[in-house]
Image (cartoon, rainbow over all chains, first blue to last red; front, side):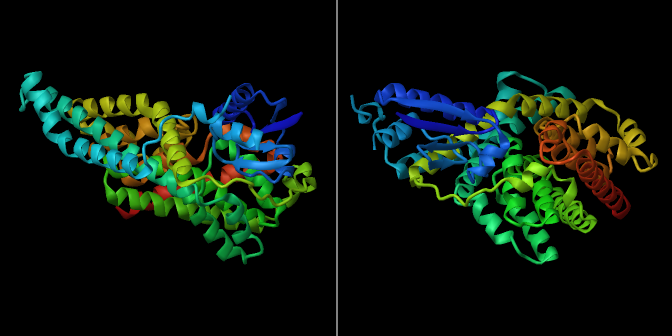
Length: 78
Length: 345
């Protein structure tokens, strides 16, 4: 079970990353939970300053951009 | 099921960029003849009439501004994908106050900033030991001196006012940073901010060149999709103002004879947040009608730098006293700049 965390206070780009993550999970069939982290203290404590951020199992895969669903899918099956 | 199957067929990157550039240039050069042809041939309006002039102005300015926005915003978004706030932060931590503040204001121009990133940025900066004043210089400059405002000012009003705006914005940001730094307001930062232990983060994946181009294009489409109604509406109102509003009226209301015009325009700018796109064309028309340059600059700066949504977000990391100080210092700086320019011109 993988843990995908989307970091962002809920702006439009953060929602886009969350949608892409869900799509990637559906695409690959990998068992993963998508969590949206909106708490500022928690976002900052992960070291992400540039939202939205995407973390897969503790590895920061992207910050400040919206990766595509196929990017995320590739990271998931990696 | 493979993920490769869902990837679209790839056009080479250079071809996409070249094609886009060619299309842009063609559109740029046919804009003037096309707008004249549409107004006076297709619509058959009288070139000497006020209405004909207003329509020609509108049909020329809307595509011009849209093209400028598309080109510049894409380019800037692409370039800024190379500048991470993490790098800015380490460049700013532990500098002398004056140099740090000036550098922070300058970084504010190029660094990505949407109001939803304000809080993580603030925490990240403060927590890494960037002085409060330096952090504020960045927070003020970043939204104020942004590419959309610069493009619109340059395209609609002209280079002189654009340069004045950028310099004035940097001045206000630096002055606000120095003042807030001097006031020693660290205890008015919300307590939890000091407790956050942010590790420095290494991003495990580096976007490729075509990722960066695609991201830049997407964010451009996103930005233009949001602001185009304001741009079109603003230019329409501006075109009408050109023809139909008497100069005396504007000079009377916003002119140098009314000393409170500058603070009044600053107050009016706060609720207009995010509408720089719709306001700049109107300001352009009013400038032609005698609105003083300083009043126009102060109005513009208030629109971009002071906003309710941003204040609400910043309240999460600042106690009311610090937030009030921040707003008061920035507003005062903008008002001083407004009077100064009115007095100089």
